[in-house]
Each structure stands twice: as C-alpha cells, then as structure tokens.
Length: 301
Image 1: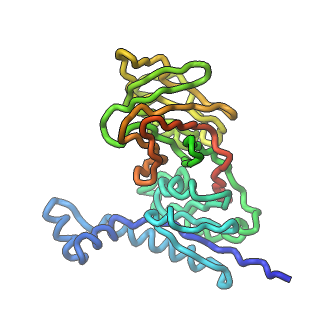
Image 2: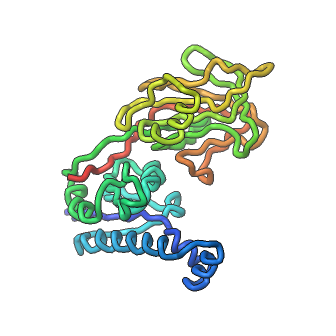
Image 3: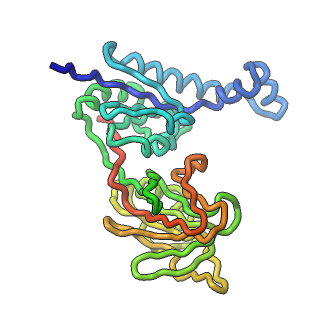
C-alpha cells in the first residue's frame, strides 16, 4: 500500500531593497554611507526588510513539523519544479503573485502582505497570522478560493506563455512594432508601439492607464470576470498601416491573432517580465485567448 505524500509549502519571495543594497555595497555601513551621501536613509528599507522577515518566520513556524517545505525567489521561478499538491505562500508585493501564477497548475496560492503601509494588498490579502491559519485548510482543499482568469499567448509552433495581468506583443526596444492583426472579421497591417491583452486582474494597471489616457468607452474586465480586453498602443496611420482596430474584448472562444512583420526584435512577454519572453520575428503567428488555467487565490476567512 502506497503512503500518501505529505503536503509541501513553497514560500515565494523576492530580495528586499535592503538585501539588494547589501549585495551591491557589501556591508550595511557602506550602504548607509552611499544613501546618506545622496540625502537618503537606510532605516526605511531596513525596517521593511525586517517586517518581511518576521512575516516569513511566522508562516514558517506554523507549518506542521512533518510537512515538506521549500523556498524560491522570483529570479528562480522558471527553474523551480512545483508539485501538484503544493501550497504556495507568496510573501511580499502584489506583483509577486502574477510572477508565480504562470508556473502553476491549480495549486492554492496564499498571498501574504508583510507591510500594508507599503503594499496595497490586492492579491496579497492575508496577514501573516491569517496565512498561518490557512495552511491546513488549503492543503486539504477546504479553503475558499477565488478563481482569477489568465491570458495565454500561443505561437504557431505550440509554445505558450501565460499571464495573470497582461501580455505584451511588440518590439523589445523602443522601435515601432510591425505586424498583421486579425480580430473578429477584420484583418489589417499595423504599425504601433505594440499591443497589450489584459485580464480582469490586470485591468487596474497598464490597461487602465491606456484606457484613461484615450478616454476609452470599452468596459474593462472585472477582477474575477472571465473576459479579456486588448489595446493597440499608439497605432500609426501611414501608407500600408491602418488604425481601424484599436481595442476590443475577447470572451471565451475568441482569439486575437497577429503575424509578425519585424525582421528582428519582435517579442512577447507577460506580466512585465521581459526576460521570460517568446520570440516574435518575421512570419511568426501568435494567438491570444483566455487560458484554460486559472489562478486559485485563497481568500482569508
């Protein structure tokens, strides 16, 4: 008879500003001297570092002794092997949740806000104490979860990229992006600053800025809504470049398709992580749609 595997708690963090300063300057004293010479103080980032450390220690202490545990930083997420029965605990900024979401396959995610004065807490909703109380319900599948829709970009070779906030399609530099775009029954050649496809979770960020700037009447998807919205950034009217497609919605079953007309530098990335991208050079096709996967965000009691 095979014994059931014990749950594993995987804590996800990123280096704090204080840790980054120590890595750059070697010692606290050198970092303090560097900041003071420029009118800054080390006490504020040091205090934020201590608050995050205290939150991590509280959650760690609450993990049952016989359970397995792991820890991964943001920079190593693409090399970390998550297991189906993991409980993910994200400690830090809201942006860490999208960073980890695309590497998961339905595992429950507990977002811990170690510093409510610094982080808004849209996705990291739990206090360290609440997170400690949610570990066992989450592992047993009894915790209340909120399903957040995700977007998927799929190249014509089958390679995919997931996003919890938004997908960017364009050029990797400040050059104009050139592509052929198809939405609904319309297809055209276009030059722009690229385009983004956002989820409901991402509708409060980059997409909202574009929407407000152009005074768009397109309804942005709500955080838990299974709908996407897309925006073309600065479409350029020129010979051979049309601007009739500027924005739109993608419901379940809808696809936004683009063919690259860039010789080099075409890129597709998700949630602001440019280093984890798909190539989008001349002739490649990408289809963007609602992803079959969802983020399972644990809701505090």
